[in-house]
Image (spheres, rainbow, N blue to C red):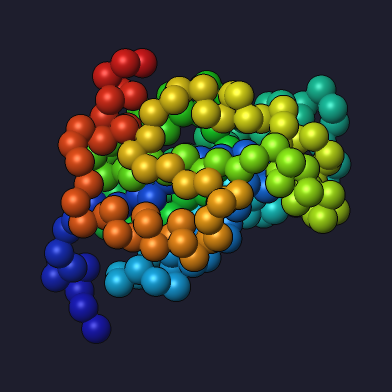
Length: 189
């Protein structure tokens, strides 16, 4: 068994999938874990919400609870990456503060920022097929999720399946251009 002092230090790569609800982020993440050459952790924001106890949250406290959950999620992602773990993040940056928070926490040159797009009709179809999503959620998120307008790579799950998107992302990793989208966004915020 290795001692902690013999584990070589490194920073983990963060493949950050940003898109609306039902855009295909989780499917792309699952494919990435299957095809990437090194171990990666999939950290979806939905998993953090699912960890919360089933105790009802009073309506006047819901925004505070959600805000704390997202802040904690961002710090968990940053902690995993700073410990040298590679991470695939699955998130919905539908509020500007979420992006700013991630920009302040993650090492920008280690982030591959992926825009996950999907046509409105397909988002609606997917939402109807998922009982856990309110109708129209993705349509309300579209403009805000991609408002910053800058990515390292983009995928359209309406024209490419999750496997194709994952392969494009994997093939992009070895020759990532600099500055990264996170570096440029951090300089502009």
